[in-house]
Length: 450
Image (tube, one colour):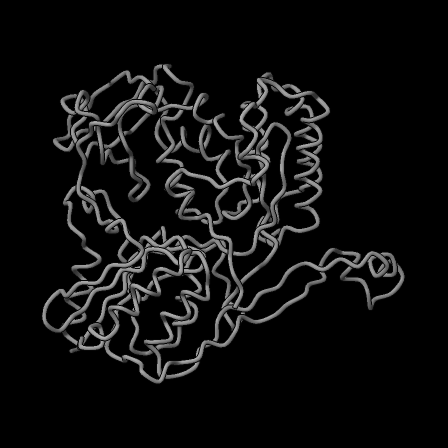
């Protein structure tokens, strides 16, 4: 079974993983030499040119031209942080959630801060879902931010935030942009306009100084995991609920196996994948194999193939033309998922959302043809694959997605997300209601089938 390096769940939380050598470099210079700056940019351009699996999804991008345009930009940067920001902007042109630039350890901590509030995207609106107690009288929970520095929300995001975000899908681009929309230099001021739940308009000046303070915030109650890999509970005497919150640790298999005998007593089942950023596809498949009575096909994959002599011969022979045009691929299938003999086949609803990613999306692809399964919620994260990692000057790192996954029949989901059969897009009123409308709806629909 192919293992996937999944960082989507960490990226959702604003945490990144970097290589060993980068982690150990704690003395990031204030500025890099011009040679190092050019080398880092060139390394990314070179390796992406050879390895990136999704150039066809950015047909408007002339990658070589963009590289040339970024040379003077990176050389003109005055700090290491500015340099890495330019690399992030170059990287974001590829529009892939598994192709990223990671800052050197500690650089973000001293370069970026934000006001004492959390902002959540819903229907392209920025909803305040958590706020420091010192601000709660000024910014009621459920308020929406409508402008920043006198610029309307959408323009601010598209001009100042989105150009630095690597995302495969539009909905995750908006999700991450809204989350980071007030980030900036520590202890600087930011002017915002908000609309309170009662309709009052307010202009406020906030300070970016909350990152290193112990948070004392109030928040809207939102659907969330229980903080563990696995959760099992009865919703009533017929419906069982299990939440699979990560496939990165085999401990989830122990927890699942320990509860399986009781799960088998259910007449209906809800599987919650909304908080699962992925991990190892073999773990996902092992759990799913208990809920199918037939063998299942997983995703198929391909990766670019380079044979230097073939590339040369392609200038003269049609047989090797794909190599000359950088369009030769090596492909293969995911392993067949074998059904367990001791399976449990009952009406099942799978809850999915914007944070369902990578190996959790593989779970859904395996389950695609199970007639007793229904999916409900939002589109998934829409990014997966096998990244290849490289170290960057100054202690940071980069990764490039080198493997392209699709459904067995060739349908694409990277760049789009997997759509649920029953769509329930997040709206501002859902956040303000503090109700789990996806779970509630799934329970109601499931009870009509058992």
